Length: 552
Image (cartoon, rainbow, N blue to C red):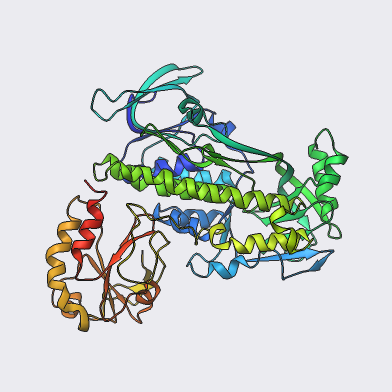
């Protein structure tokens, strides 16, 4: 069986970014064709990415995947740090958990990529779709002369099934660090090679280190760098260590699996370590890179490792890919549906390229320190790499865990005229209530304020705002959130609510957004949960002007 000859989006590479993009687009009614050049049994392996941070879990929740993931993974809410067999609680990874508390996903989820990909793939297959394993992209060409929006003709090849041509509207390269799409598009990759080499080992590991099963641990050592310990799903753990200069000198021709196991045991001393089952191991050199652009010729896009590569020091690989995919899905889907102007997918490239560049800068610093080398920038902060690592981790905490990632002002992110939040930041979570049952849900939005003071503004809102929302069916979802409670929205607002009505019993949500309860506000939240714009209840024209800049 060969792939269909037309599709809206051709996705090359069925790793996390490819799968998530395919799931999200399919949920939006966009047809996509997902290729993986390796056969399924070859692609599925242990190892690789393990940890998902709170913001990633929020984004995956939008794709209806988080509930399935937490059933498979290990929920981690704590960490411990050791030096010379003694606890050193003032260092280590534990400070991140305090910052998690601004999310209702106030934990990290440890799940190896093999199992997270299974969850993503199962969801995709639930929609009647499947990955085309064994098919690779050979070449493509762009031709807009036909005027039917299928501007790319791609040639696909399979070892036993031959060759087929597929016409598509967009081409996404999510095919890893050696991306075929990136190479065919002629997008350069700025690569920085380092002398740092790391080892990672997964399997059934047993140790007498206290707290080995609480989530994370770090062990400060002289010869093995800052050792990473992670409680994984099921009965597995991961240990990781750096090949410091002394270990590189000890193994000048590279380290074998047996030698890596030996050094892992040595590095954990005075604690004991036994590897009862080895699932996967790797020895790799740290390289950092960012593609020159994430968008080429209007229709070719890059995401995940095809766009940026780095170490696993702060567990950013999978998390960054999730941000890429969820940033792209709604923009691409809306553009294909005819809702958005071409400037919208361009913001994917600008927003995620800027995020990737910051990620690489952080990774250069953390990978050096984990390997026992203090960057010049931090020479004045002391000589202890473990203390410098804590500083780098803390200084970039919001970005590292995703909750602080923000995007620059653009056609989508415009200076708010109401509230206290800046544009381009994550929209805060708050607990709200629907009419009736005393069951709280999360605010996923007209802020009505105190209806006794703001209901006078609603007649004009009811006349104007639905016209803006009705420009394209399904593009905008209206929600009215009012302080307090009432028997119905009609009673409180002297008429129907705009969209669904929710109550903000104690005004907490209004406070999170900096909305004055006496005046209310209209807040525009992007589909990926980023604050786009905010203005007053009586300034619907400003909302319309905001949308007219990028909506057809």
